[in-house]
Image (cartoon, rainbow, N blue to C red; front, side, top):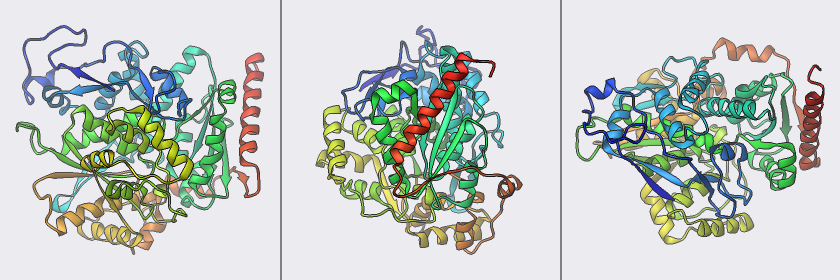
Length: 524
């Protein structure tokens, strides 16, 4: 990985600007346009697959060598740039970050701005995201004001716009295949439903999502939406997806792609969460060096955490804390270097985090190993072979320096939800509660009292009435969610004993045949 330094004294055309703006003065009048010069290239964490541009990474998901795409060059943001960005809205931060990592050659800036504005046009909050400042220094960044009340609406709404932009230009069709533990499926469906150039297939773990999450997927009856209910957990349903994507000729023939958290576009947009959290919670940008802010990240597959690690590497002075539930592989990796599967995935109140294979850790290993693709490939191949891995001492040390971690039980989740309601009359979802639990532990122990902290809230409590009741509280459910129970549903069962891989292949082949028929007879 090359560290690409962005001089805050250059304009969009690369011309040197001699005068610098004060952080709080005339910079508010200036439009900041720092663009990466040339094409931004992406390489696989495993180093074998050819490099691709943003469009290639967007449509690929996994690289052909089984790795994940990462930027070949990582922009470095200096103090002046961070000061200027501190005045930007969340929407504008997304635009700046996407401009850096996509490149003007692929999407001109005016088109990019329009795509992101369109992506956020249906969000309920005018600022897209919202920071709640609660008692005792508790800051909660609400990332759930999109259509499905989950943070994934943010990245997936943008990703869908990028996909549509390129598909229209190329006159192409794709079939999107998604495995979900809860929110990814509904947010993916919402972002692409009704699109003529895209079909979406979603595999959900039947009975393991909340009722609301399942209904948000099975009640969408658009003809380009296809939902399978799998008799298995989130990791088991990922197996047929990975098997299909491993067949490269099949993938290419049917134009397959994924929108899971492995997709680089999602990680890119999620970087904005960390920048916005920092700028909202930093006490002042007048000090030297810039003050740190602790960002507490609830995570399952590790996409938000990978986004935070990249933001750190770009120069954002955040300290990352990862919060997980009882499925604690990331916590064990941070604490002990033990990246090994447990025998079973434990069902918890924070069901969207009931994951034991956090795929985005591969990006973090690559990043912290100094972009050593050979070492990363060896580590991940060993993990795939044995389902057990102990990190090398140097890599574990770097991970421990970059990230702190905590694992939260269901009992602690409900206690945290109860305390937050008692002190603030504020309902947390169980996933957000894993982050807030860390804040309460620190305040109880009077630790880190001089550092600002922001807890990311990935979903609305309205999506998890069962967890709210388990905490002894009363659910508050919006009318549009209540209406789901009265809608028609459609879901194809994938039962144990069925050939899940063949069922998936058959569905994909049928969709390709239908698209080819439409292309031949466009009037039909």
